[in-house]
Length: 284
Image (cartoon, rainbow, N blue to C red):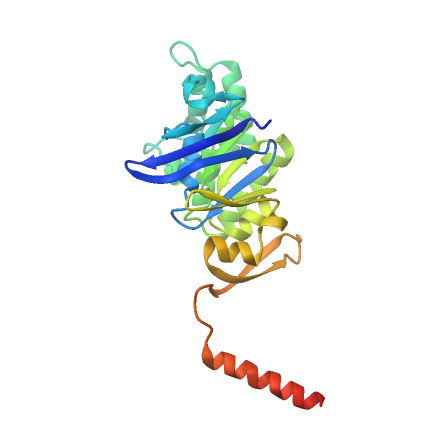
């Protein structure tokens, strides 16, 4: 049984239903990527898993117990979330930010214990942020800032990490920096990571489990090589695309060419037919 799962989960914003009767089991020790078009319910599901959003029906289960009935601090000791585009107070240093991750473990007046400081040091080292310890968070580059927030999540000491679009608004180099860090955390420490990802090629390369959503429903689920297919891309994203193996990693790679519901270009079709006729005549 997976540590984190949903059973008949239904979610709504007011009277607008987003997710209905979702049954999902997150594989332990793997990186799971939630993919889908805008409005498919990815971030809504992640918020519910983090107990930020209350279900209208069904529930989210952590270690076999309804997460919304568990004490907040107990949940925070087992599960950490990095929301989309987090912000920190101006002037807050990296170490101060990371220390917030120890809140679920603190007692009394919130004084950091030796164990708290050990975990903070470890999180800074694991994310390559030790040299930025005393630097204000708002003075960091985009990739460094995201690594600082991931360090805060790691300092919580949880086995499960939830990340909502961790590479949004980052340039290509900083996106790679964050994804490589998550891959390392998963491989070296067996962290269970669930992330919402827009870049399909990042999802297929760095995740071992893909969940493709449409209108709050799981359309496809499984290994990237099984899920990332032209048919899935047509059904879920309405795009016409080829899928080829990445020349270096072998992971499936999406090459989009157009919208699936666009009519074929007549001129292009005529040229193709003329080309095929010429081939036949040449072979005759």
